Image: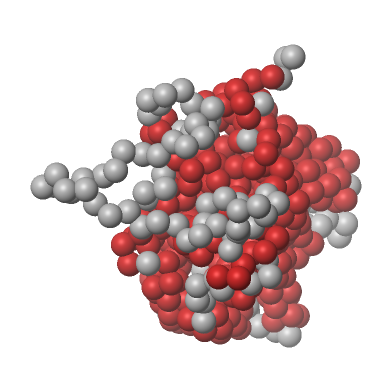
Length: 454
């Protein structure tokens, strides 16, 4: 069969396979689907499709356009929830290939929606079809790398997920360059840019499909030694818990709240990063500089995923999240001050720090799950937990967009329209701090026992 190479059995690594050849495959997928974090560079052009230089009466509002990103993130969580168990059985190649087809296909359908000015087609393409591609592509490398790096689970998840955070670093300037290339007196260039990006990302993702490998059954890494040659103790995962049992435990739902609130606080800003900095600093920051800001946030998001998840192997997952929530709340509360002071440098510095912890939260959560629920169904449990991202993907942008519109409608200057939202985000992070504080080991009654159905 032409697609036999996608079968799980064909992706098992041979003996003595170098596990460090697997992270590039994971990065190829995550750097591609991480383009979602750069979607805000399309927001202003999409709001002037008819008016070209300014919004026409029948052009889409920014609050309406914000739903494209929200729906994509919602379907990321829905597809991760739905296909998590299938992934464990089908293997990463098949899941990555399906991800590439959906993610690229979503761009093509969205391009048709832009060309015909049919908003529902843009939602169907980038939001629904592309969102399914996001979910499939997100969980497959994570589950695979946890299996390859049981001795460094935090670092492993950081390696997998850092690419998703860094995707905007590529996607943002690429989108701006393509729109500029295709722009004309009658077209802002979004539709052809979508077509080009769909084709480019499909080819890039196929590198990951062809190169990913699974460890052979029973494979374990060589036990590490310290500088003196003494074998180091490796933190063992918790006893295995079946995915259907995991979702009945208190720790699972506390972590659901932890992830949801951490993501809600960050994702609304990421979805509106480009127009937000332009409106908070009018006449100082233009479209090109705003695109650079989006790219910088992507870099912070990416490096934070690797740094914080690796640090969590040393200080523990719970302590790492305490830092995220306490420091994040203080930084969000300080953002309005930077805007009122007109201090762009301080504003950018605050958000760079926020984004490192936002990304670190994503990268640390799979290792947190491994510590509590074992490795047997960690991919499927991770998929179930990502429904928190779906909720946050809607809640975050809605809070930012609609509170902004309400503020503007009541005469608040654009530069001040985000202040209430920032204080609200700080409050949400304090609630997340409490939820993380209450996380405790799983009750032994939920552990997987020999003879149970897998």
